[in-house]
Image (tube, rainbow, N blue to C red; front, side):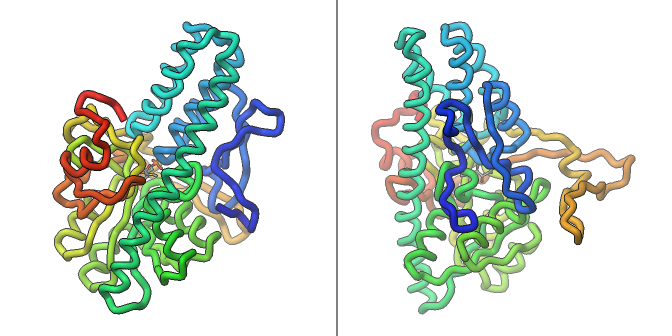
Amino acid sequence: MKVDGVPYRTIWVAEDGWSVKVIDQTLLPHRFQVMTLQSAEDAVRAIARMHVRGAPLIGATAAYGLCLALRHDARDAHLEEARGSLLAARPTAVNLAWALGEMTAALAPLPPAERVAGAYAKAAAICDDDVAICRAIGAEGLALIRAAQAAKGGGDVEILTHCNAGWLATVDWGTALAPIYAAHDAGVAVHVWVDETRPRNQGAGLTAWELAQHGVPHTVIADNAGGHLMQAGRVDLCITGTDRTAANGDVCNKIGTYLKALAAKDNGVPFYVALPGPTIDWRMASGAAMPIEERDAGEVTHVRGADADGTVREVRITPEASPAANPAFDVTPARLITGLITERGICPASGAGLKALYPERGAAKRA
Ligand code: MRU
């Protein structure tokens, strides 16, 4: 996608041929700045501190983190050590474990002298695959948006999304936003309700920025406004992403997704979740055991924003004596989900639905 007219991916290898460039998402929407990763430790920090975030991009960053680790030492013990620290950087998005699994499976059989080149080739392939997958999700979801427009007899299709599941969360295109970009580019009129997504405001800061860059009509709303808009008939469909999808179709996504799914169910608004195959955790039977990341309470007690003069400041919004809790994800049960939009088609949120699209995956295998 383009930033000020210049095409970007969210992660790429620098001109030196080895260091890794990413967009520093902690600075958006106030400043667009690229940061450089030069070691596995840099990659771990970038993931843990959310300079990069979003399930597919976390996986891609971990893949390049292994490349950087192997440049220092390509022997088995170091590969294993780096894999362990990258895996621990964030707990919920299964793409992290998936990408590290893909990398180690490709690298372990190679002699150490061939591992660095093998690692960069595999990480590049993971990124290219992600782009192709997200483009395919966009094409699948476009059909839904066209159908929604036909059902209402024309006009703007009103779509609500939560968090950021756009190109910034992937390598390019996004998951939940890919159908929206596909529709907009195809001339299908869409308007997006963007949940602010407290506490880190990925909707207000990242989704709104992306949509504005691409010229997609959108409106940022407080997290609590979605139910009201659905009651008022002002939402045609919801599309969100997911960080981990259980084998039965339950999805784990940014905190607050569940409440939107409940409101959608109560108001008869279709609720779709867009996901790439690597987000399916085939070993997890249901959402009951999803690892839910608990983040720093400071993300709840403080907010960051720009002054009128553009200076970015962080301010406290709670009494100093009040404790805060910060569960970062929640589980939306499959029964609340109208369908899963994947690169292979749209299926019911169920074990049978997923297996019909991914027949090669058994209950005991990881995607
Ligand atoms: O905490 P984040 O910003 O990494 O959470 C991201 C989300 O919850 C996205 O919706 C999810 O990763 C799907 S993105 C393609």
